[in-house]
Amino acid sequence: MPRCPHCREKDSEVISLFGTQAMTLQYRCKRCGTVFEAIKYD
Image (tube, rainbow, N blue to C red; front, side, top):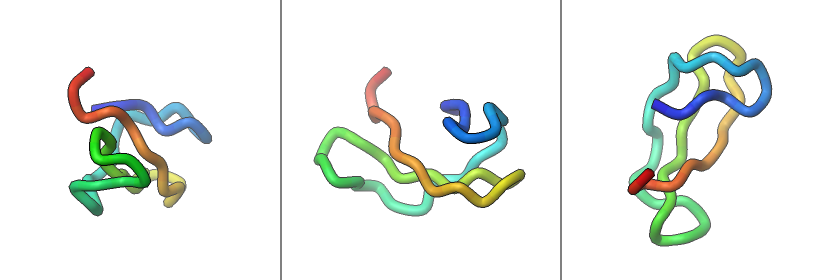
């Protein structure tokens, strides 16, 4: 799992299989609630 860019926590959940780009996933941090994107194939 990628780290949250806001609080650096690794505990997040996938909320969408596609972000603003086809190669990104959207995640929500379970600690602070920040929604962020990360590359699928890292």
